[in-house]
Amino acid sequence: MAWTLADALGIERRPAPPQVYRILVRDLVLPCRIGVYDHERQAPQRVRINAQLLVERGATESDELRHVLNYETIVEGIRALARGGHIELIENLAEQVMAVCLASPRALAARISVEKLDVFADAESVGVVLRRRRPTRLPAG
Image 1 (tube, one colour):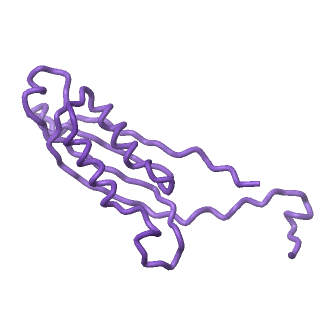
Image 2: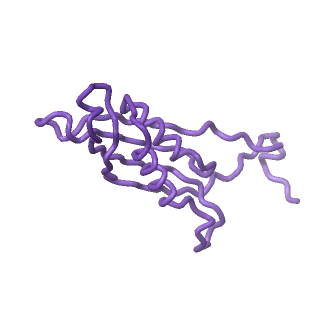
Image 3: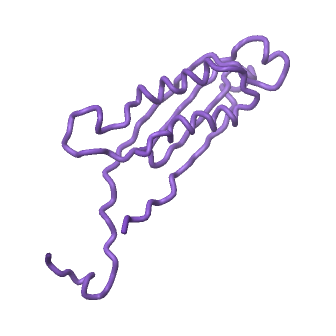
């Protein structure tokens, strides 16, 4: 094994940064039972969900699905949340969407927005945005 200047100076070499890509889910509009008011409990409301994930790629130069995080998994997970029971707060729905997005260890970070579309006649939407990043992994050894 060849010595490097870092070895001679006793400097730890950092592992190469992972190969990453982004997954986008844009403007997924679903009916959802959400809200704290009585009138919101009467019928589902339309919500728009956007998700952007930073994902670590598996083997490079591969065209196999097993080397990526399948966006279908994300969309189906969000759809299941929307079909589930009543959710009081939009912040809680956003946290649940975030959990779906970060369920895979390949997901390094995510930005989620969840908006109610029919709350105010003079506003396109109201909602929340969450951002999360996995803690930095320490190299083994």
